[in-house]
Amino acid sequence: MENIEDRLAKLGITLPPLPQPMANYVPFTLAGNLLYVSGQGPKIKEGEWVRGQVGKDLTVEQGYDAARLVGIQLLAVINGALGSLDRVKRILKVNGFVNSGPGFGDQPAVINGCSDLFVELLGETDCELYSLQTQDREQADARGIHTAQFSDFADVAALAACMDRVVCIDTAALHIAGAIGHPDAIGLLPYSPTWRWLNPCWYPSLRQCRQQAPGDWASAFAQIGEREDGQRDQAS
Image (cartoon, rainbow, N blue to C red; front, side, top):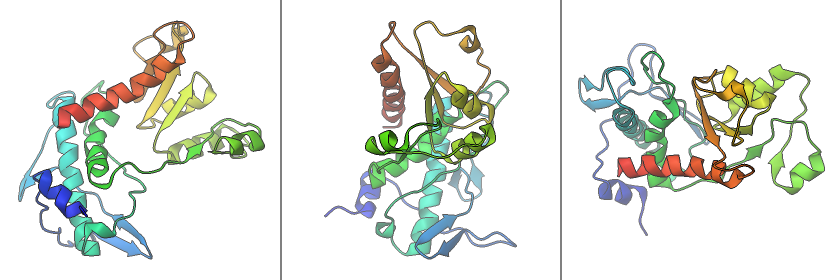
């Protein structure tokens, strides 16, 4: 049976050595069955790093490749901490920070370089759905959607900040996700959106997916997958 090491070999990836602790920096902390990995950077080789701002010195594609290098560094730490990548059951969360030029707002496309690497090695994982709207709990449970009790918009913002991705139509929840600078917020917009969504967008990190014809929500959803398929093609 093919394991993760076999997949790494097929991709031509050799994991670098485990980074050594320095001063107060430790590369990982293992708490029970959860492994927390410290921040890593896009290391090309020892002493050489990818440098520059995406949108100014680097293209999105170059940023994507740099994020993939970060993923390789993270895998090296995980391998050193656990002794084998085959012990990994699931990646729960990835926090990414992109050194960006003025006006650049496509950080999720860059960070996907790391996320896509994990998907290539570990496969797609199940996701859990949460509602940012107040709705009937029984109806939500029937659809497999988790609900929460919100007392104000601060509660909505707190839950949105914990989500890996926010997908929403033009509601207060979408504006909140954009206002907090959520790194992977997607607005599903009608064919003729209101003036609020005319470019330049109020929220630089928010991605817009519009209907291609009035009432055609399927085309808006399809744009999410098309964008990600294109990024995977560029990486292959």
